[in-house]
Length: 98
Image (tube, rainbow, N blue to C red; front, side, top):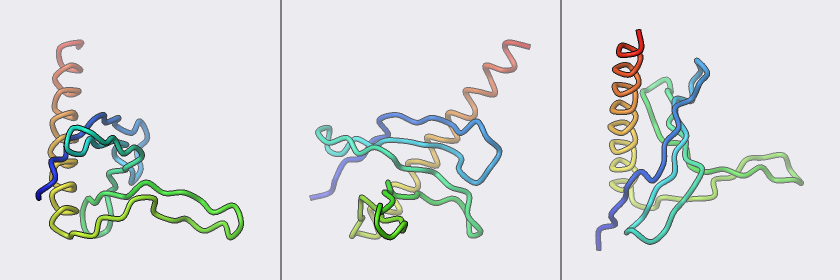
């Protein structure tokens, strides 16, 4: 069964760094997973999974693992498309406010 994934919420980063947006996803209309990041990497944009820092070792661990590479690619495409739409909306709003 193919999972249906939607962007539940996305916030564009206000800082000019590698993290472009923070977002949550809705899976099959029933499960919300929070804490994803859209990151500009050396090889293009990618999705960073929600992470947690270990209190003992100070290492970071992914809280969500995508075991299917096609699902990961679908999520990256969905996040990039949503991000670009939000950027365009912001640009249009800025033009209208000028």
